[in-house]
Image 1 (cartoon, rainbow, N blue to C red):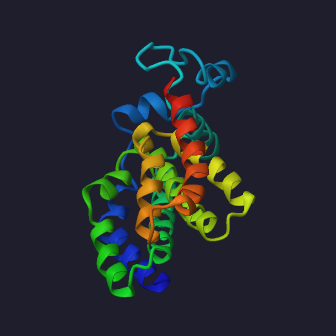
Image 2 (cartoon, rainbow, N blue to C red):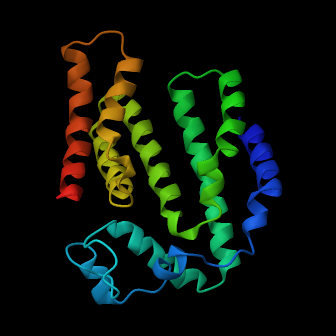
Length: 220
């Protein structure tokens, strides 16, 4: 599927993604994608970090760090910001495909799904609006959590719980859209297991507790 995905992604990029390369910052891009002071990067974890007082205190702390690092690396070269967004979109599609293979999707199903994902409205928007570029990073980590959750269910090795904790932290503290992550894991577990019994609960509960605890911490 990797060659198929590369081909379709390049086809999508030629038709759509490349058109956004030379687009300037718009709307929230100008407000958020910038260099932050050390004090602002500290405040983002527990208080107000926005000098304009427009944003919620301690809101999406890793997204703010993401904006800071991206601007530190690329400066105000919008073409580099846009190209980086496209690269993250490619890795997002790859992680989605890896996850689908692990839940036993057939090649035909994946071949049909990839173009549908690429040409969906939200995927196209990711390349056009820098302020939501952390959403790509968020969902890359979301699906990495799901992948390591499946590994945990198969082998119950402690290291997989640490991977789940790490990638969940990056996803949840980037965007609150993935508050459903703990319940998504339960659904994946139910999909992959034949019986809802003690053995199932023993496999599902540790990742659920880890991810749900992170949701509560971020929320409060």
